[in-house]
Image (cartoon, rainbow, N blue to C red):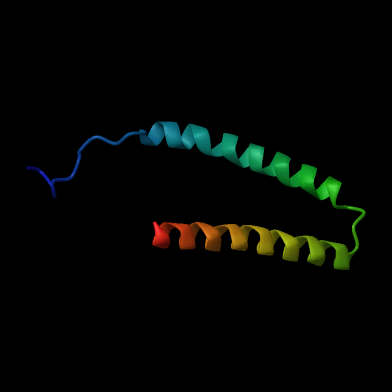
Length: 72
C-alpha cells in the first residue's frame, strides 16, 4: 500500500499551463467587458441590490446544501 508516496507524474505539464494561462486570461477579460457593458447604465443602488440578491441566493443555496449534507 503506497498511501503516502508521492506521484512523480503530473497530470498537466508545465508547458501546457503556460499555454493555457493566456487563453484563460483572454476569456476572463472578454466576460468582464461583456458584463461591464451590460451593467453600464445601472446606478449604484441597482448594482448594490443585484449584489445583495446574488449573495442571498447563492449563500442560501450553500446553506441548504450544507444542511442537506448534515441531515443525510
